[in-house]
Length: 286
Ligand SMILES: Nc1nc(=O)c2c([nH]1)NC[C@@H]1CN(c3ccc(C(=O)N[C@@H](CCC(=O)O)C(=O)O)cc3)C=[N+]21
Image 1 (cartoon, helix red, strand yellow):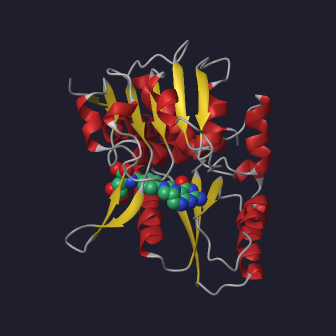
Image 2: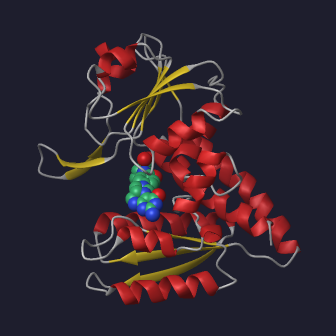
């Protein structure tokens, strides 16, 4: 068997087409949605991601608000930028690119974002809203995964899902999203303390791997025909000495799985499309 590839890039392009129409409707009401990004330091990977977000904004007609601080910026400087974006009516939502340099307090920074401008959906208030089932911006990667599966008619209702990874940006909130009444999946959240990971992944209809461990999920660990989602993105140095990104799913899984969300071309573009969606939704409430 060879897995059907679920193309996140094409689906993200579809979503951007839909957003372009919604942005036009907003323009008729005199509203231009604005997305802010805060980048501290000059990590080339982070710069590339932030550039990608601004390119996406330009494609759908969202205004970009870009703030950059040097790697040695003080906590006060960061706090001031957040206060400025919180007060700026042109900024409907913004993100602080993670990871931050080690001398800055990430928890404090994330808590200073106005929860109603939290385009990532990672503010404690918004994660709390997700726990309680209240409305609020949803975390982009979990939302993107659910949206990609929905648009490919992968049934979640009644399905058993093994989520591998309990991180705050993907695994933990994804478990919450999938177990909402509207999704009704049955989730097993696996992590580094899980004793027999393969027993859990083999029992699942859908396996979503967000552990950040290259090649963690191998073909023997899945039920043939299962749907597999690769969320991993780890920078490794190849045999040629060049850096490249690798996923958490061993390439051989594509021979056994029924469907595969690949990396690249899967969850990453969907995450970016959901960031835009969060900003447009917020602007629509103006
Ligand atoms: N506050 C914050 N929010 C984030 O959402 C956030 C962050 N910090 N820090 C870093 C991670 C990483 N991340 C990616 C998003 C898209 C791709 C993506 O689109 N990747 C392409 C390949 C790379 C490309 O073509 O640009 C793909 O998977 O096909 C990758 C990585 C968001 N992150």
